[in-house]
Amino acid sequence: LTFLEAQKKVLENVDEKDIILGHSLWSDFSALQVWHENFIDTAFFFTLKHFPTLCLSLKDLVVEAHERSGGSNEGIEDFQKLGDAHDSVADAKHTADVVFRLLEANLFGQGKAFPVELVNLPDRLLARISINNIASGITDEQLREAFFEMKYLRDLEAKKKLPGDMEKSIILRPIKWKLRKDGKTVGSTYIDFPSREIATNVFRNLPAAKTGCGGSNRSGPCFHEGWPGRNSFMHKLLYFDCHEPTDSEGFESVQPAKKKRIENAPTCETICYGINASGNLKKTITVNRSKSSTVFGPYGRRLLMIQQCTGTRIIMKHLGKLTISTLT
Image (cartoon, rainbow, N blue to C red; front, side, top):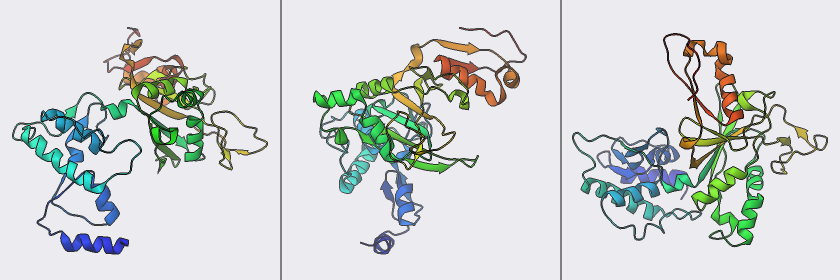
C-alpha cells in the first residue's frame, strides 16, 4: 500500500464514534497524518517515579497487567523479544488484553489514582544504557564500533556467554537529533543489553572523559566510576573524538592531521539504570539557592563540575539565609 492508500483505508473504515485502542497512538496518528478524538492509549496508563516523561513499552505493560491480574507469564517471554521485528497483529491483541486485565483487576475507577505510578523500573530498563548530548559529528556507526569492539563484550562473545551473536543480542537504537534552544544540534540514543549484569559491566568499562566536567574544557577528568544523579542512577561522561569524515576509531584519539577535528565537541553523558547509587557517599550542601552563583559559579556549573569530578551527589536546599556548609 502507498501512504495515500493506507490513509484512505483508515478514513473509510473508522467512524467518528468508533474507539481506537492502541499503544503510543500519537506515533500512528502522526505517521498517517490523521486525528481521532475517541481513543484509548495504553501508554498513559502508567508512569515511572523519577521518570515522568518516560513512556513504558507495550511489553512492560503486558508484564505489569499479567502480574496485577494474577495471571501467568506463559507466552509473554516470546512477545516482542529483543531484536525481533514487531508483529502488528500480536501488538493489537496484547494491547486489548492489557485493558481487559487491568479492568478486571479493578485498577481504574472512582477514587483511583491515574495514571498509576510505578516505583520499580522494568527489567528492560535495568539492562539499558542511555547516551545523551551526542555531538552532531558522531554517527550511529561510530557508536556501534565504539561499544561493540569493547574487549569485555568481545570476550563474552568468544566464550559464548551472549544469547546469540552480538548484533542480535545487543540492540543500539538510531540516534535521534534535536535542536536545542542555544542553537546546537545534539542527539540521544540508548543500548539494550541481554541482562542487567552485562549493562552494568559495560558501563563500568567505559572510559571516563578526561575533561569537560561542568561543561568546561579546562576541568579535571570525570570520576572513573561516574557520579550518582538525583534519580540515584549512575552517570558518566564520555569524550567521543569527532572528526570529518565520520569514520571512527572508537573512543581512541586519532591524528588530527589525517582528519579534520570538530572543535569543542561536547562530552556524551551516559546513564546506567542498572546501578543504584543510593548507597554511595552523599554530600548535601545547605546553602541559599540565591547565593549558589556566588559560591559555585554561574548557573551552578561549578557545582556540577564538583559532582562529576569527585563522584559524589550534591543537593541544593532552600534556606532563608546563607549558612555554614555541612557534609553528611
